Structures are given as C-alpha cells and as structure tokens.
Image 1 (cartoon, rainbow, N blue to C red):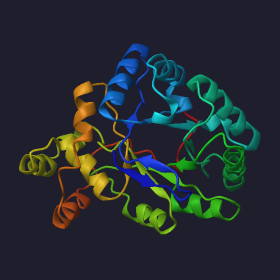
Image 2: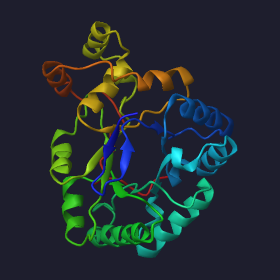
Image 3: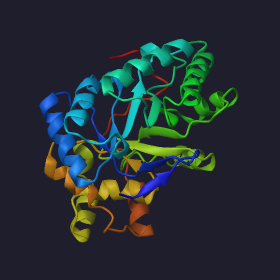
Length: 281
C-alpha cells in the first residue's frame, strides 16, 4: 500500500476503508477480516457512525495487531469545546479498544448559521485536539469539511495546524481551490465519498473512459483522487469491491483525461455546505 506523509511525519495509507452507514457487527467483522487480508490498514470511522464498538470488537477478535491498523475517528458536533472533545476522544478509545488513535478529526466546523462565536468555538475545540496530540493519545489531528475561511480563522490561534482536511471529493466536485489551499499549507486532503453517488457512476464520460482503461467507473473515480495526491476513502459492503478499490495503481490518467474529469459538472453527491450545517444526527 502506498503511503503519504503528513506534516508531522506520520505516514498514512493512500487508500482506506470508509465505514459510514455500515453498522451491522457481523458485516463489519467480515469486511475488516477481508480488508486486512487484502492489505488495508486505514479504517475511517466516526462517533456519529455508531460503529466504534463493533470495529473495536472486530479487530481484536480477529487478532489483528494494533500496529497493522491505522485507526481514524471523528468527534461529533455535540462535543465541541476544549473539555468536551477530550472526553469524547477517551470514550472513543475505549469503544475501539485502543490506547491511541492514528488520526482524530473534527467532523464539522461550527457554522456561522448557528453560532455567532463560531470562530471561538472552533478554536476551543481545536485547542482540545492539540491537548490530545500533546498527550500522545492521537498521532495526528485534523478536520473535516473545513473551507478555507474556517482554516484561516483557525490559523490565528492554532499552535499546531491541522494535518488533514477530509472533504467531499469526486468527479463533479473536484474542490480544486480548496485542495490547492491545503497543499500550499502542508495539509493532506482526504476524499470522503470519492465515488459520489449513483449519478456519478453512470456518467457517460466516465463510463467511456472506464471502458478505454479496462476499469470500472468506481476505479476511475478512485484513480482520479490518487492522481491528485489525495487519500481516498471508498465505502463498500462487498468484499469483491474491496479488492477492486485497491486495483488502481496500474492505471494512469493523462493530463487531458484529468482535465476532462475536472470539467464534469456536478452530478450528485452528499452536497452539504459546511457553512449551512445544522446539529443533525
């Protein structure tokens, strides 16, 4: 598995297994078993996914060595603030049956729609993240769904800048300006929902390109993220797809093909604006 290096030197696998909406414990155990056999180590979860306990049981019961895993978790909106984020992290550690996380992320920024003091709230939550990092409970810290103005505001008070920003990315939502912003500041970008949704997978241009490359449309979407230098986090409950999702390093996209994908108009995805997010969930 190819790894990317974060700003603090921690190495992160470029392809991981997303676990959003995978809650059945037996399904998770079988997927984690297969993923481990295939060479996956990065498991991406979140407190809001309600599967931390199942993941913790799965990897320990399967006898997987902790050093062979890269566990990434996220703190939910209800636990913003200096003390709350630290308490939430410790609870997640117990559920996942581990003494440390490889990566811990703020799931959503506090938004100006809900908070007049959103900058302060994000700063205090981040201060708690920094404390966890300093204590060694997490090897790397970052954010999810932060736009450039959220990161600009955070930089005014941060002692340690986010090492990762996980955002929605896929054909039709290339996030070019945000990716450039992050790259200039040494922030690794993770692609959540790298396959978009059903509408992305039936896009005519992508289907034609997949045919030419003898790949699936999903593999073209993942290769698109890999070519951009991102960490990609596809989610599947199909063991065959788990294997297919790794088979993207033998396929290269030309500059012209990358520009073609960049130009695809929005064709479906999660589509939540971080500045409009409410305390859902």
